[in-house]
Image 1 (spheres, helix red, strand yellow):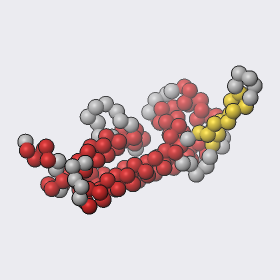
Image 2 (cartoon, rainbow, N blue to C red; image 1 turned 30 degrees about the vertical axis):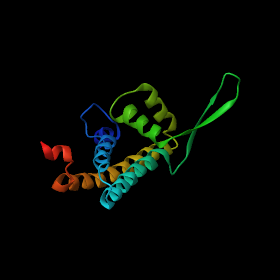
Image 3 (cartoon, rainbow, N blue to C red; image 1 turned 90 degrees about the horizontal axis):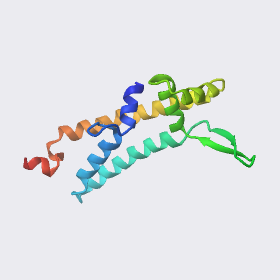
Image 4 (cartoon, helix red, strand yellow; image 1 turned 180 degrees about the vertical axis):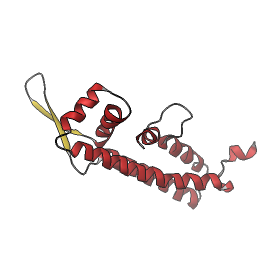
Length: 152
């Protein structure tokens, strides 16, 4: 599951069907249309993008890391769910990034770090699975094929 989430969540190489690229492609097909259907579809795409943004930026359990700057001041920085997600993906599941793994180990006793990773992974999986249904419907509807493709 983590491998699929990574592929959907990152742009990847040109030609990959990431979430972001697919939304851009679908949105480009609505530019020509000033119909209520095009407006509705743009709102659907906005909703899905908003759900991904919510999953990557909002955590149920807030985490913060502290550091001391050169002048001796303690600076507190929020740890975003997106940062936590990539710590687990590249530090534990898909790669052995030592810096990310060290952060995972630092947070392991608390459990909130892993909870935030699992919550974000679950939220993204729900959004991407639901979005797949929209993409499938678009691909199966001949009337939604872009005009440039119809001419070929």
